[in-house]
Length: 156
Image 1 (cartoon, rainbow, N blue to C red):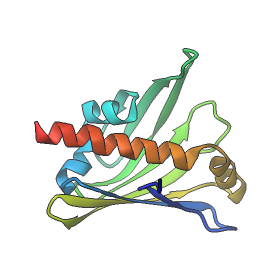
Image 2 (spheres, rainbow, N blue to C red; image 1 turned 45 degrees about the vertical axis):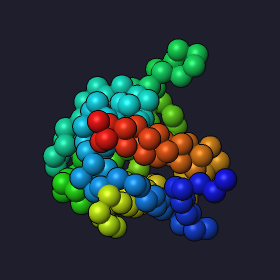
Image 3 (cartoon, rainbow, N blue to C red; image 1 turned 180 degrees about the vertical axis):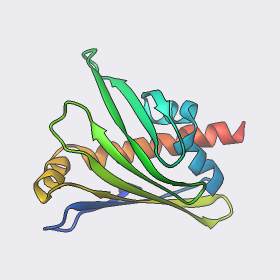
């Protein structure tokens, strides 16, 4: 089965491009990234902080099957409702340096929207290390959950 989330990484570049179309209106897709309760449901993580404004920050925490806690955090540099979020992203204690993420949201039609992400890494080696993990599978699964969870919430 083909993944609905497309991940593209050009050889010799420090970036990953991710594209996904959702059967959700633009405002609903954007809320899935800005409302802590929704983020927790589709990401399967605890939102410790989520300040949706320029110079705001966020911090998420997840627990793996062995009970180990992992934190993810960053700073929001640009926040334009229903259009874009520019932020840093750091996985604490992972060995990966901070990366820069550009998220762009667009309406395709009534009830359908698109997310485009550009992730920029410190080096090509860091980007390639990320791609060696089950990264594409993980982000695709997260987006599938986003579609399912948010669609249910939207239809209530």
